Length: 184
Ligand SMILES: C[S@@+](CC[C@H](N)C(=O)[O-])C[C@H]1O[C@@H](n2cnc3c(N)ncnc32)[C@H](O)[C@@H]1O
Image (cartoon, rainbow, N blue to C red; front, side, top):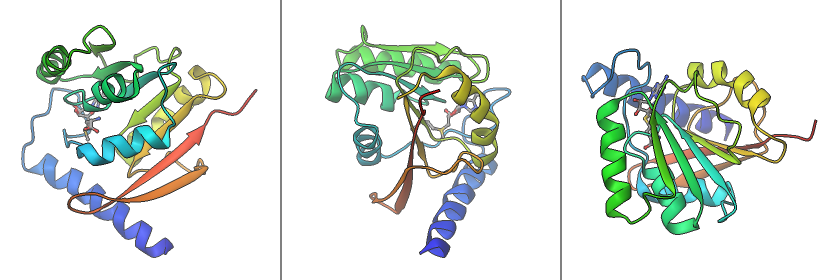
């Protein structure tokens, strides 16, 4: 089972690399190429984080804004997407307006390492093993106790998740991992 999980992670890591080599749109300074989380997987990530209307959901590297928009639209939460690519930020704002959630879904063109994420009660991310590992000190210092983190496919260094769900998407199985910030 562990071998299978490792294989799945390797495959999705390779998927991100191949996407990068194939020249997927990438703004300057962006280390992780733009690959969308399928909508079924988006919903499962938000369910795993137990998102409610009281939550503030931050998606780090928000792409076209789908995690934040779904959190606002289907879970009644407020959300913020942090994304380095200006074209994706503009696209996210357009989709949020069309979905009628623009007042609850905000998008910021910013580097995730520069962003203040302290108001987040839920953080979602689909990045890479190395970027996740570099984010760990920021997640642990800025987030409040009880905040949940869900990572699509990749670990956060050697920080043991409290739960890992293998979710069957339209084309492959996705590993979704959950952490909760402990009380200090
Ligand atoms: C794999 S995509 C995930 C998109 C979206 N979160 C989803 O799950 O569909 C990663 C996104 O992170 C963005 N990104 C990568 N490095 C970033 C950084 N340092 N700051 C902000 N955004 C970044 C990329 O531009 C890309 O849109």
